[in-house]
Image (cartoon, rainbow, N blue to C red; front, side):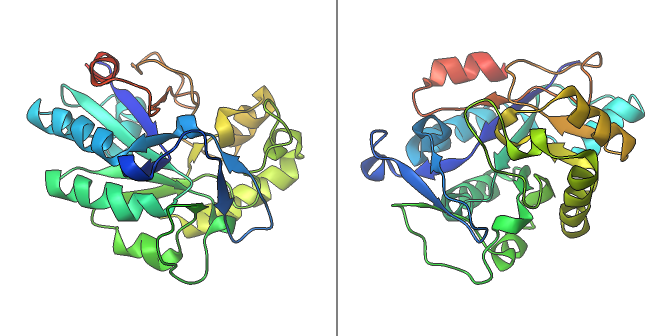
Length: 247
């Protein structure tokens, strides 16, 4: 039995999306970055992809089901898929949430707690604006939330993140801050999909059960649960390519 995990970040209406225009992030933490256009999909694409999953009777997994699959060897339903969203940008609430709710789907959002704004902000399609804690509460009937660091979601360059160079003590302390907030404990997503063997070992030592990469492919019982595969869904993916990933 295998399952696919897919990863989304940002969604825009087709008429509001231009892949040539950089999208600066707007987060509480003093950190500026640009979200690559490959991490966007259009609302129209997202609706088509979710409709395909619904029409073809896919089961949207919870993290507890994935944990039980690896810890207790509990079988998962056929045609299982894990829907994940990283960083908690506004479009998750504006666009993804109503589509998922309409279909009765369950999803996971990985939270950078240091990025969450104190107050709810009006949706701004010109930037990648992080949500607030209240926004996350408003979506709890569809989403569950897990650890994406508190302050270590920063990159030094394309291949090195702040987390990768942190001491074990600093990384463990950061994990604990985020873990205290998120309802689902000891489940992690590597920022930017970047990590070192030392990071993986630290997660294991601290009792983490699942951790997600950005490596393409399906997961089965032989996949290391701290190196789970996730397929990034970019705007240039056709519906036929999407079907090939999830089927």
